[in-house]
Length: 371
Figure 1 (cartoon, rainbow, N blue to C red):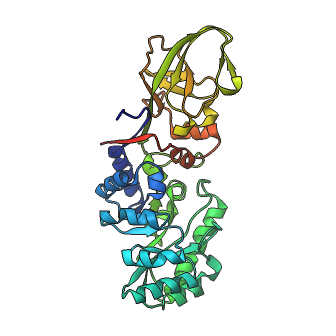
Figure 2: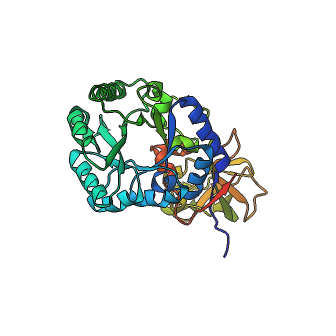
């Protein structure tokens, strides 16, 4: 079988190094590695194996099938999002840490564990301002008190989530922290405590250091593991990118002045030029917004994208690389400073955030691992 034209290289050594830097920055808090959506599309098993080697205390995912895939690693696995009623029996049987979002779901989990003669482990999800899932913080005290009395259910943790922790010092996030801290104090007065108390995501680790100390004793991090950050806020951690997206030149042609390039004829050659056709397009994860705006790296040179990016190909100006040949390597993302192309560069051009970029690499892109 022929080698894939487009490869996404994941540097597992740098990934482990990033984990170690995060762990050192938040010590004595534990670090839970978030591996949703196939580790954000990078390939969950190699990434999870590397993070286990690095010392990850817990793995966190979005839903049941993602959790089941990680059980062979023999690490605690928790579901951060929701658990559907018809998923509970299997999740309890597998020993997955379950999210408890209300009294009703807690009762269903407790009943399932009783039928299976098991003790299910759960983390309480408190909605302190995300508005998506969990029990509203104002109602949580009484709900948690009732849940704490249910049989066959161990409340191992309690957590909440931030929608705006990328805004350093933001009043909204600080109110969330204060609300959850007050709730924990009220629960303590009722002799209800938790092994794990976590509220910090990657943004909060960088922008709200108070979430990495008492009463909280764990943090959750996903995108920082990849050496990426939100476009806003501080970057207090010295993390390195782990991704390199490589393609190849599929054609090198000398084209005349006035030639139109690509769908929509959005670029017309101002002079006779050497134009390269790269074997990667938006189906492989290149943002369409790079059209006539971004650049790719060939032999260390920045080659501007000309014309509209198509599904399978991208055209570039090869004026700086006159010796380029068909088959040459093209670095679409990554590379060596000072000309390296970062996830954040693409996010800025696309008008999105880093998560969107990392989750966009297509299924025909081969994931390869080094380190």
